[in-house]
Length: 280
Image (cartoon, rainbow, N blue to C red; front, side, top):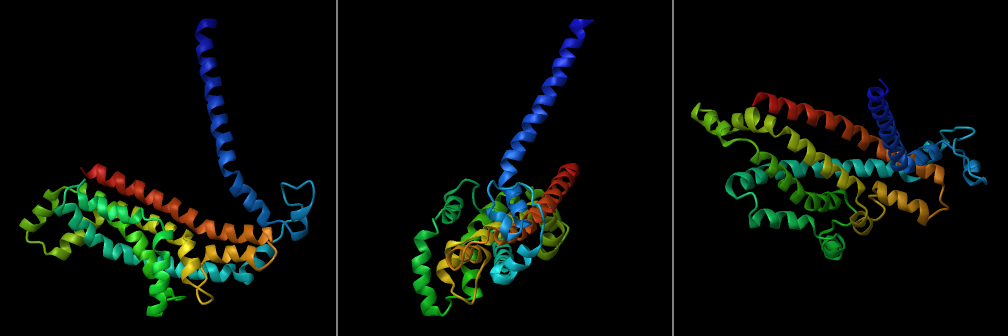
């Protein structure tokens, strides 16, 4: 009897140890985010006490209003404008290009690598050229200029990702629709768009995140008229004494929408993949 219960006991102990290890690693990896969140609710005087407190003794929301008023609100608004519009443009321009790449060219051909290699270009390389060009075209410190550069930066990645998803759609679906006399727009709306929805969501999320977090182009190609969130956060250090509570508050506001978007989009991706696999 003892010999039979020992393996079960060891198995349960091993399961508990594995769960404890996962929880410990999760807390370790999330500790910066947790500390940022706790800092956002601490009053200014409590940020410099020694030894530092972990939990705020008197939680406050002043950091959120203060950080919003000193530039965080404007940074979030400008980042939302340029990242959203550039992402939509990338998807509108990238989908036809990805379809042509997926249907007319081999999956591992030279053209696919060339398109993807444009995304590998370090931003520091073209930024000076864009700065001089924007000065001549009056695009410096404008929403249009930043949207153009973000589209240029993310469009190759969007094309490459969408092409990989479109290659997974069998050609027989399109051929059957053409035999039935379906026009091109019905082929797009009824077949290609629903089946490629996971790829569109994935490419859109990545393009949105890259544009939302980009700093170098926003720093060099804008002045005082357009101030994105990364540039606004940098100004907390350059032009005033850092208020860590306000930085934490604006950081939480900036990260929160992306986390919520990624969570719900992940669920949408899982449902889309499940429906696609179930229909085959």
